[in-house]
Image (cartoon, rainbow, N blue to C red; front, side):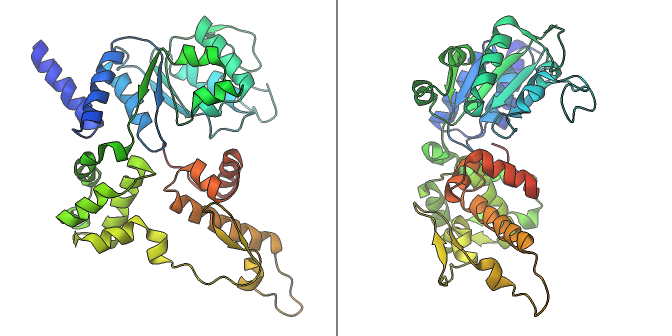
Length: 356
């Protein structure tokens, strides 16, 4: 293959991964090509749901490590006591529950690329250990003293303002400079709404013909005026929701308005009884006595109060995640919980976390 033909092939592969022809996306693709030529650490900044993991994958696929492993880990979704083992591995018996040797992500991705998502959520003492690994290019498994060399390109991502986190003493400035040799901004969907038709076609590509929706001009105009707080993830959910409810049909403004606000359209908020606890700042209204109203104990029969409370809690988690289009931090805000607390509850109930 000639050099020109190879470049065309590379361009096609990148355009198939990073969808759109807006100026923001064209500039992002050009930056991906530039940073892919080196092994420098890259930090991706941008809102949740904007596709940072796709950008990390594109940098890997465009670079010299393309034939090697690509490993991804969400630092905010792993309990703080397990993050060291996830990254560096552990030996059998090194702590309670370590029933076998585990190879960490740094070793799994050796020779390739390691993507550290939500790096801003990493606890402070682990930031020190990560910095040492990046500087020395070696790791030590938990419960071992053997130093192991690793050859990994690290790409990290965050939706947080790390400048503010550094100022507050929550994130190490030296780690920021080590991770962010190159900093790329991943654009929000609201800043590239002209890509929405192309993204819809992309999400529909693998759907059967009778599940694909069509959109009239007014519907497309409404989609392009939407704020898209959940970014590309929210649009993907919208397309899937449309295919389930209106597969094969042509949608207009009213249909789009309903699909953009599914909880309001499909489950109108009832008038709440006395005893309702209202969460401020746009939070959820959760009936304090919902469990008792939903199920009254029969005379002489006990009621499993713990199970009833867990049922209510699970229902409200699902409602919050739907309202937040799967964005964990936003759902936690709606529920007045810490992000890590919500993640622990999701793990407890088996609620799947969507990809960033």
